[in-house]
Image 1 (cartoon, one colour):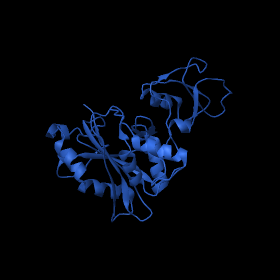
Image 2 (cartoon, rainbow, N blue to C red; image 1 turned 90 degrees about the horizontal axis):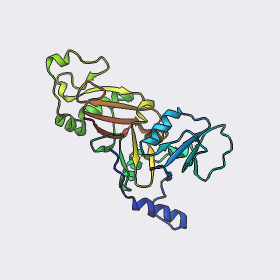
Image 3 (cartoon, rainbow, N blue to C red; image 1 turned 60 degrees about the vertical axis):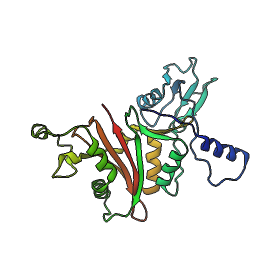
Image 4 (cartoon, helix red, strand yellow; image 1 turned 180 degrees about the vertical axis):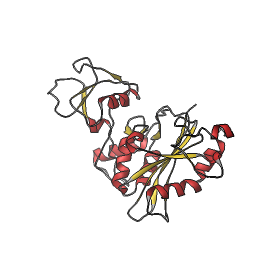
Length: 270
């Protein structure tokens, strides 16, 4: 569920940046792209598959047009593209996905600021609230997957969502559980089932959206990687199914001080 909201704080920051006036915080590096309801064409070669970029556009009610010479409003230009004369807005793949080389001092602080400035961080087609919280805490483990599991087992967010999940297991259902899933609590299947996800797959499942700007999940994960290096995604499901009704995703890494940091998202599909 995409719930764009008004972002007056971002507008104020951008106006301050343009005018040269001082401010307590610099404007965020993300720039608006005219994607909502646009007619989009692609030309050239891209780092990710063209199908992936087209699917990204369609998530925001944009029409993808095969012919870049047609009447379009946005042209995305890749590598080795021919020179094209067009009245459409032109952007690169990096601009479309809002990819930057900028690394904030604190990734949780960046996420909290995005939320404060009107961004909704959620999954495509989510029926729930999406963003839950950021975290930054000490850990006894210097191995990322172990640290994430330990955090998940004591997280009040995970415990609450799993406790409120509508599904419960019978002995017959337990006998059919996929080998891809493991019990979060070996003594209680109702505490959830977990698996680790590939970053490359998860990156396209969520975005940060305001009424003016779309920051792709890929951009957010690359920003997190710039802050901490290795990151991982731990998914806890109410059922041992990839398309279970409730799933909590903990995305995090170990910062230079050895603390575990990241964010938690809640996905609901019925």
